[in-house]
Length: 122
Image 1 (cartoon, rainbow, N blue to C red):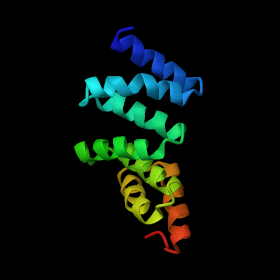
Image 2 (image 1 turned 45 degrees about the vertical axis):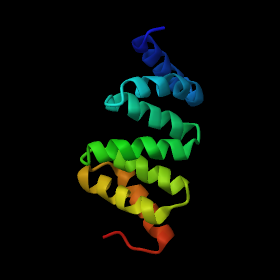
Image 3 (image 1 turned 60 degrees about the horizontal axis):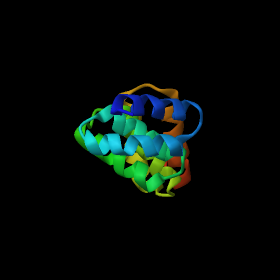
Image 4 (image 1 turned 180 degrees about the horizontal axis):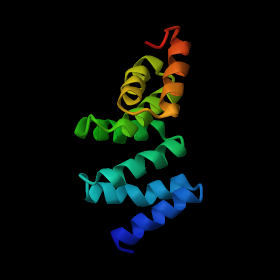
């Protein structure tokens, strides 16, 4: 199977709710093409959905470092850190995502983590 077929299969696995299988296909693609942001994001999503949170965090940190304006990667990194019970680290990423894009889910995440930390949303 070539990488394009492998990528398409991985997306199908994600749609089918099989994120672990998707991650197994996506990891070698990201290794072969480390600058491929879309493949890296899909790998991060697969890791997140399969509760491989430290791996998701690592991929998302690469994405936000390469493109600090990527609001979705900031949001997903914040959610990952929240799931890792690291709300203090999560909140800046969640706030940044909410400031960059008016997505209701972003504001909800900020409110949830702020409340957990006992802080009001600015």
